[in-house]
Image (tube, rainbow, N blue to C red; front, side, top):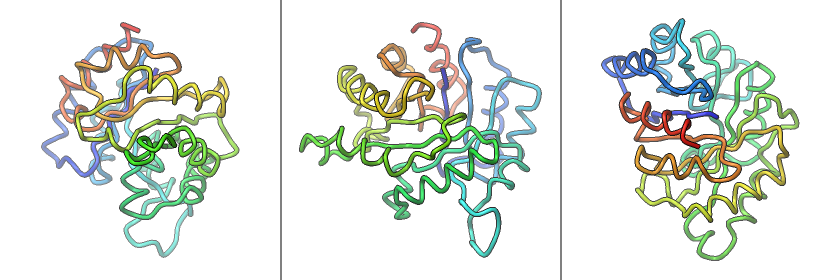
Length: 236
């Protein structure tokens, strides 16, 4: 089971104390725990987490190994900074930065080839769910976003309407989508849920069939909250 904290555009040097507290904490041996801080903190976070079970990752990556891509970061740069995983295709990047399924596939392909555990995010908007198209949208995104290589791949289902809103799908809704994803990716790929995961609802979400962990946003910013969610992994 994986619990992955996505800090988004939050955190300066002072926040390293929270990462240190997580690294020094306790969580079930069955849980892989990771934090993806802003790029500016990756190297320092990796130093703080060195020698512990906590893994550090990036929130995005470019598909090219190098070049004239101002403001971007390559797989080699992530590895050099100490990252061991990366998030690709988050809905906020799809919506705000115009990333397409093809872009996500190229990034995921490059990341896996470099040896980075790679999270590919998919999920429907509120309008798409209300129109009964959730499964169709997720299947289409998977078809266009998944790389051919699957070892080291994690799929994150993140309903866009639940991200940062405090709303979460019902366990039945999560189970339905995760079952559909499982039918597409097969048994060898982990599927995690993302979207307003908190210590209060983590155990219920992690107990749903085909849920192999969580992609956590705001609730991952403090050690106490993230460790509480990680502890929920032992209850499933």
